[in-house]
Amino acid sequence: MKKLENKVAVVTGASKGIGASIAKHLGAAGASVVVNYASAKDGADKVVAEITANGGKAIAVQGSVANEADISRLFAETKKAFGAVDILVNNAGVYKFGGLEDVNAADFHNQFDTNVLGLLLTTKEAVKNFNEKGGSIINIGSAVSKTTPPGSSIYTATKGAVAAITGVLARELGAKTIRVNSLNPGLVETEGTHTAGFIGSDFEAGLIATAPLGRTGLPEDIAKVAVFLASEDSSWVTGEEVLASGGVR
Image 1 (spheres, rainbow, N blue to C red):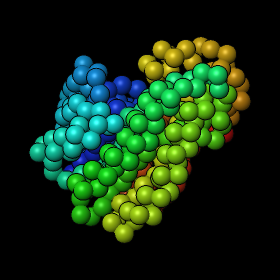
Image 2: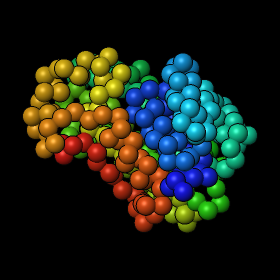
Image 3: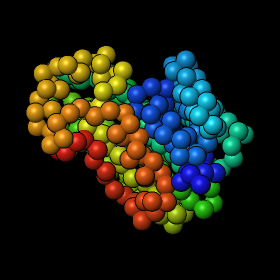
Image 4: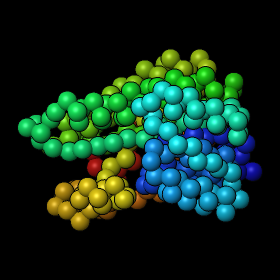
């Protein structure tokens, strides 16, 4: 029997990158997966097709985590398709880098609305739909909350907030047997990090030079840890920040 057999997982921002890999790995482990996306329908449909082609169950549901009506619809569609939720992966996130001179209210609110408020609103709605036996919430944080790189003040602040919220919610939801952990990736090669110019840059070279494992991460490096945190293998783990960064800290 697969370790997530008969479990239902919702993964936000799962049309590409780390979220897509997490969704596919959860599906391979036996979970029925809801692939949430904000705008990249083709990407989400591709993830669903891959899961189902491998014998799994999955649906794609559009919705912005910063919009309460979209979140309500996300879980209504989840309940209709698969029933109660066992696993929530709060992966949806945005980022924009720049020095202090570039900080402005629009960028601040855009990043905090998705990365922090969106996570809270999604979790709030998810808990109403969780299995009565409890389950696992995995918040995708970032190693930047530890490494604090220059030019990332707003983004790093959002991920610092995710770490703090993880600790709070682990305590609030423990009585419901809902575990809450933060999975914090280092630099991972994705469509997003290519577009942002990190891959092949001096920034990446510097990280690789200081990384004990000597390489940039891949989406599956993070997804494998997510499966652990989603499963009963981590049944005594909650309120933790799990750093998956190849040793960069």
